[in-house]
Structures are given as structure tokens and as C-alpha cells.
Length: 501
Ligand SMILES: Cc1cc2nc3c(=O)[nH]c(=O)nc-3n(C[C@H](O)[C@H](O)[C@H](O)COP(=O)(O)OP(=O)(O)OC[C@H]3O[C@@H](n4cnc5c(N)ncnc54)[C@H](O)[C@@H]3O)c2cc1C
Image (cartoon, rainbow, N blue to C red; front, side, top):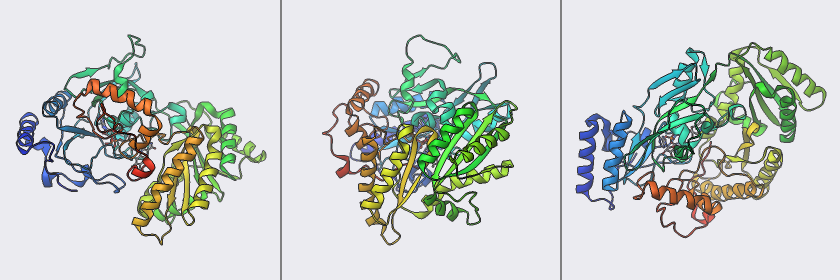
């Protein structure tokens, strides 16, 4: 990490008195500067991006967050909110050392589990896995599950509107939020937390925080929907001849299993060497062009395994599936999932590669996968396609590994063009270049270029709430939201390193 120095935008005296005021307000230990700032705060999970900051500030309460915001507004010094720092689009870090990082890592309280209302109220820094474990002990469960849940925090999940493997059943993070509390850039604390399931006293303006990546304020607390614990489950690993075959299998499974289907993940065969690079002892359950992971779950004691087996048997008879294995134990199911989870780790191990996080209408997924793989083969020979994702939501991570012979510098230069071609193909199919990871800093150029009206309306709203533009400058929106610069072509200016998992 590069310890930051006050930049030209704030003179040393202002910065010094600002940091002194932060220390006086929060206590010495809650304000880190210089070499006390570890890489955890400044280097992203993929180790691809490095940021800088003036200080890392760690408030423990909403009132303290409010004081930090008020002080920042008074001086005009920017704030980057940071949760678990697992985001994949550079939203929680900045490459200029002119802002503070406000970390919610001390705001971890699980304040209330309302068993009747089926809600859970938590502070923003609560880690998803901890929330899941605590709920599980009380017979409940949370609807969002993602690979980074050991670090990702509720505030970060809300701010990115995270997806994950259970979206087809429970929806994205925003669907779990009943109410939230946010500290606005000038320090005002607003809350829509009531625990009510029905409350139509006008629209809740705080829902603007969902997917806003910290540009409107700092999310400090949230009231979330919870579910009865899904104590019964069945998991299968199947092989299909193509992505179209996988889509046919999804249709078949849904025809008689929709209510209990909780995950339907796909991985192309070309991804498998990466999964095996993480665990060389891994034995692949099937040998097929497209691998499919299917999970059923329920809080009721249903014969899920028999049901899944019967559905797969009829799919086999109809030629929809080539091969399938049903997990006979929890540990076998976990081994199936480790193949899927190993892909992300394997890619990071491999080094620089192009990553994407796109979505198209479900029926267009096979066409999108073929178009993307054909583009890569024809236009970028030697690059290896990695197609996997949450097929049940039409969300693909189409990634590309550079030929081993290419230097990282060469690969990065070509990678930008590949990323642009991926976005072009997905846009032509009416899809989205960001399905679940958000815009952050890496895709801000694309956002402004492809959705100018949406960008500019959000910029106007931001100006109303944050006239000095102190909240997460350069993330999601143009740096100066009141005067968006001329729209440059992201293909030539670049969108930073390609980002997604
Ligand atoms: C291995 C791995 C697997 C992943 N799998 C998935 C997946 O399946 N689906 C998916 O959607 N994502 C996935 N991600 C991406 C990431 O985990 C999510 O985006 C997650 O929601 C980020 O949470 P976080 O607490 O780490 O947020 P951070 O990375 O700290 O921040 C993300 C953004 O939110 C803002 N922010 C954070 N906290 C607050 C707050 N309290 N108030 C206001 N703004 C805030 C930040 O400024 C930043 O813009 C994965 C990441 C990894 C590393």
C-alpha cells in the first residue's frame, strides 16, 4: 500500500486540523494514518488494484459516522465507505490519497432477530457469514449466499445490491431489505427501519442506497427479511452437451421443482483445469461440455433427494442431460460446490485475466455464450474462454485467460479490447454489462456512456444530497456530478482493470 500524503486539493493545515478533529471525536485508535494503514484497506481482493487514502476511520456507532460526515462536509474532504473490501469493481478504494476511508468493521452488532416478524436488524459491518450462523442457531436463514460471505458485510452487500447463488429463489440483496438507516453526506441520520412489512407512506427514499455503492451516504443499519432455516436439501452435479442443453435442463427441473430449486449454476468444461489447479486431488463428477450444479432446499421435511433423482432420470430419458450424480452426503455436496468456488480462486492464482459479469434474458444465454466464445476464438486466438455463472438468473461470468506466452503488460493491453467486445455483444442482445457486481470505478465510463439519462438523474439526486460531492467521488458517477465531463469513449479511455469475479 502507498501511504498517502495530503494532496493539492486540501492544504496541510486543513488536513491536519481535520485529522485532529477526527481523533478527538472517535479516539486515537479509531483513526489510522501512514504505516498503520494495512494493505487490507488499500489493496483489493483480486490484488489487481491498489488505492491510497488520507486515513482509515473506524467509527463504532451511527452517531460517530454522522460526526465524521459532518466534519468531512465542513472541510470538503471526501469519504470512501468500505465494508469487507471484497467488491470487484474498485468501489471501495481510490487511487488518489485525498479522501478518508470509513470502515464499518467495528459496526458488527446483530441487534435484533424478530421471530414473529421474520426480520433481523443489524449494523452495517455485520459479516454475512456471521449473520447466517447466528440466524441458523435460532432456526432461521438469510436469502443471500455469495462466495465472499466470510468477509462481505451487510452494508457492502446492500450498497452493491449483491446477487449470488440463490437469486433465482430469493432475489438479490435489495429484495431482502425491509428498511435501512443511512448517514447522509452532511451528517444527518435518516432511518426507514420500522420492522413493518407493509408501509406505504410514500416511497422510501433510503432505498436509493441499494446498489448506490456509497455515493449517497453511509449505510449504518438495516432491517432484513429472514426465512425459516432450510434444513432439508439435495444437490446434484450434471453434465450437458451445451449451454442450450443446460437451459433445457433448467426448464425441465423448474417444471416440477420450481418451489424448492435454490441454485442452478453452470460451468463450461474449459474452466475445469482452473478448479483442479486449486485442488489437484479433485475428481470431476461428470465429463461433459457443460457442468451444472443443482440445489434443492426446503424448511419442510420433503423427499428432495428422491424428487431430484426422478427429475434427472426423466431428463436423461428425454436426452436433456448427458450424465448426473446426486450427492449422497453433505460432504459430497460440499465437494461439488468446491468445484464451483475453486474457479474464482484458480483465476486469481493464474494471474491477470479478463473478467466480466454480464446478464441477458434467460432464453438468450446459449446464444450469448456461443457469440462470446466465438468472438474470443476468432478475434483473440490463444486466449482461453471461461464461461460460468448463475444460469438461473441469466448471469454469466465470461472470462478469458491470456496465452501463457504473453507478458502481463501485453495481456492487459489486449484485455481492454476483449472487455469492450464482451460489452458490445451483450449490449446487442439487450443485456447488462454489470449483472451483480455494480459499476464502481472500473465500469463508470461504460455506465455514463450507455445509460446517460440514468447517470445524469442519479447525478442530480446526488447533488441534492451531497452538494460538495464528498461521498465516494469517482465511483458509479462522474467525478463532478454537477458538471459531467464530455462523454469519452470507454473503449479508448479504458474502464480500469476488467472487473468481476
Ligand atoms: C470470491 C468472491 C466471490 C464473490 N461472489 C459474488 C457473488 O456471487 N455475487 C455478487 O453479487 N458479488 C460477489 N462478489 C463481490 C462482493 O463480494 C460483493 O460485491 C459484496 O457485496 C461486497 O461487500 P463488501 O462488504 O466487501 O463491500 P466493499 O467491497 O467494501 O464495498 C463495495 C461498495 O459498497 C460501498 N460500501 C461498502 N459499505 C458501505 C456502507 N456501509 N455504506 C455505503 N456504501 C458502502 C463501497 O464504497 C463500495 O462502493 C464476490 C467477491 C469475491 C471476492
